[in-house]
Amino acid sequence: MAKAKTQFVCQNCGTVHTRWAGKCDGCGEWNTIVEEDPMGGIGSGPGKAPKKGRPVTLTSLSGEIEEAPRIPTGMGELDRATGGGFVRGSAVLIGGDPGIGKSTLLMQAAAALSRRGHRVIYVSGEEAVAQVRLRAQRLGAADTDVLLAAETNVEDILATLAEGKRPDLVIIDSIQTLWSDTADSAPGTVTQVRTGVQAMIRFAKQTGATMVLVGHVTKEGQIAGPRVVEHMVDAVLYFEGDRGHHYRILRTVKNRFGPTDEIGVFEMSDKGLREVANPSELFLGERNEKAPGAAVFAGMEGTRPVLVEVQALVAATSLGTPRRAVVGWDSSRLAMILAVLEAHCGVRLGQHDVYLNVAGGYRISEPAADMAIASALVSSLAGLALPADCVYFGEVSLSGAVRPVAHTAQRLKEAEKLGFSAAVLPAASPDLPKGSKGKWREVDSLPDLVARIAGSRLKARTDQEDG
Image (tube, rainbow, N blue to C red; front, side, top):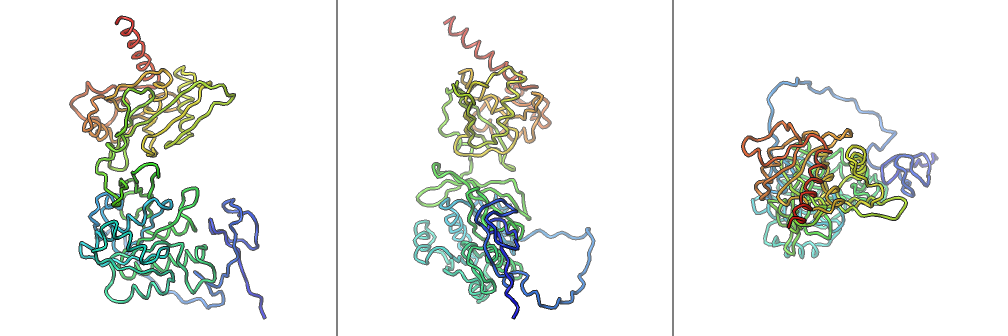
């Protein structure tokens, strides 16, 4: 009798090993390799004869283009992040930290679609029916026609979905709890997750129903399970936020039917998630205008301008190696700005601890924040508060030059709408609006910006002495 063949699969990255090892060669994680049966799951059956393929029709690139039919949810921030609503027949993967509000967001979206006459099915694999009903009552969604089930078996879920009228939206919470009879492994393993996700995607493509899958995240913030799951789905959304703050951000990292740089902003309350139409007011709500080391950055998230406060603290240290602590920004980018300030501007920070924080728990990803960061650092070191009615944006190069950034007009328009009458921006910006040019201070290089801040400090001292 032939010996049963087994393989060893890493539960973190999906790398297949011929034998067990303590450390995975693919991702470097320890104690993540589990023995699995290769006969189960996708691609099982090595003894099967290959099926003869059939030719497919080849077409040209030119031809009629059809827009993907969408289902608007009525929640403006969710529709913004998805590109206008859920696309029929698509699979959407939503990840986030435990307790961040993923189930709350999807319950509110399910209720909103149900009120619009769509057939919505919510399948929970982590909570009992009574627990989901309690959440629906708290969110005011208990009076809708959302259909609910508590099941984890893939075959039973598909059989339930196939009965009756085709659903418009199916929510699976979560993919780590799914298990299939075709895979001989525990729920949550690579094989089970991959098998369950592929079965749900196949159902969505065949029926035209929108499939929303909830995924857990690892301690690094990535969606748990094999990376192939993110390649299989049509859109990947991350629900982010800090438990110490009320706001939540729905960020798009992959979208085959829309942009990947849009965000939706929500505020968590006892009645659920509330949409934030103007996130700039949220991030600037507790601003101290007279404190040194604070600068307002005019950033962009997709097509939406966002104003956020950048806070810096530069303090003398007695340690041999000064500390560099960053929250909400790239630490490598901070090291570059510090080096440019020291090399080209004569700002000595080698004997100072540097702490940088983006207010509200917001995370900045674009390089246009360089000038706001540098201004906050110089302001903290000089002990001088920056003008309260001024915003900053611009990219700093290693030579100390300030480079123009895109969407200048939108940044300035958002600043004016919130009462900011001045802006420090790169010189020769390509899309400067015509009009009130006297309110803008164009900067060619970072030393010029540092000289202006130092000059304002000298002027303030002179005024105090004269007074």
